[in-house]
Amino acid sequence: MSTHLIILSETGESFNCLDNETALNALARSGKRGIPIGCRGGGCGVCKVKVLDGDFSKRPMSRDHVSVLEEQNNEVLACCIYPLTDVKVQVLGKMQRAIFKKCDLYGDVQSTSCYTEIGC
Ligand code: FES
Image (cartoon, rainbow, N blue to C red):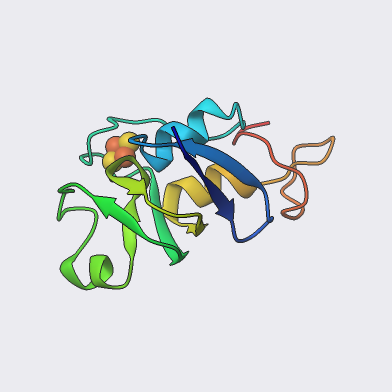
């Protein structure tokens, strides 16, 4: 069984993704905090990413969350793509908010160098 890396473009963090595993499942399995897990079926749109580099296969996803043009630009739902090579992704929308907010001791958003869930 081979694995591929999912690399977050904003941080350079990488996560192993198994053959026949969706990118979202690999991110969730990594234990990284803040990964929004929704329907896992392409219907809720919380896991939107843009694939900047690498190849992947995909299954149908809701047009309510990914337009034809977005899909042509590799903006896809992480629960609907299967990396075929190492992929570099940029998280979008709700996933971006969830992953990259940093809170100081008083709960103010500061930067993207520390990751926590919303509402810390
Ligand atoms: S988890 Fe619902 S669209 Fe991906």
